Image 1 (cartoon, one colour):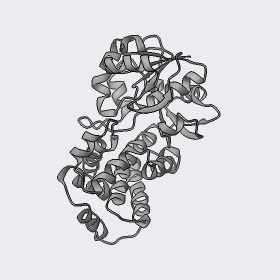
Image 2 (tube, rainbow, N blue to C red; image 1 turned 90 degrees about the vertical axis):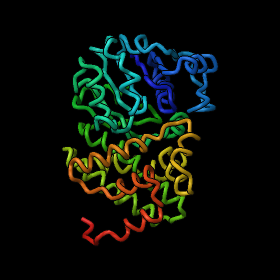
Image 3 (spheres, rainbow, N blue to C red; image 1 turned 120 degrees about the horizontal axis):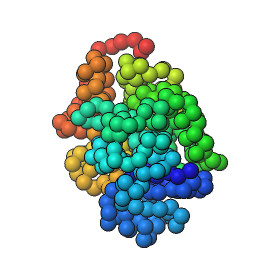
Image 4 (cartoon, one colour; image 1 turned 90 degrees about the horizontal axis):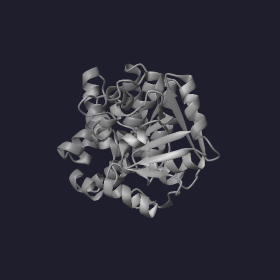
Length: 332
């Protein structure tokens, strides 16, 4: 198939390589023109996926119209907050017969839209049945090394999900399908906020008990938001839910956990983000998650305290104390 990957970060680059190895014709689009030339010349993503060779058979371009027009599948791996501005030219590309696959994980700040909604907003011709969402525990660093990985592809169309399943699956990358698009998208977005919380706990010197509590109660907050939005409970116990939550809260590859850890050690958010080349989606998503919780009347105390620490410079110890001393209640 003719496939374009829009966004040459670590995940986009890793997927482009996987799809090329699965015998597809692959184009990788990079927003920055100069870095696009660097990728094409050196065949290595020095910033986001170092020491991984990009095959010469992958076309690398900075021309979005060329990258998107006439493709069977378009994969969007641009950070959520930049999708609208970076991909606005997609409305001019010929995408009427393309499957659009979202692999980004976030909630847009200004609109509180999930990525599938953003896609339908910027490409008026696209139908919900053309859109798929792929999510799950899948660090680019490990997929690029062919470490066995399993994810889920969600779509309103079972045939679209099956197409993506067949397109991506191989002996080290296994794709399951489901039809709970909202549940899969919300899980992927909100687990990044919980990962920041576990990182803060690590940086502040708390133990495994604390991390386990944050992950478990964080899953409860994710489920409350998802169920309110019409998602199914079983989704949150699948790969895109508890699976992705475990890996993002625990792995040294996790950018969101790293941000939290550095803040827990005493650094400011501004300093941490300045020192990072990669985007930690959970930082911006934490704002959106708090706004959504207030809008929908959902109590999300961990999300609230993460916002206080990130944006109001609240001491992590004070935030933890407030969480521990909230009014006592039944777990369920």
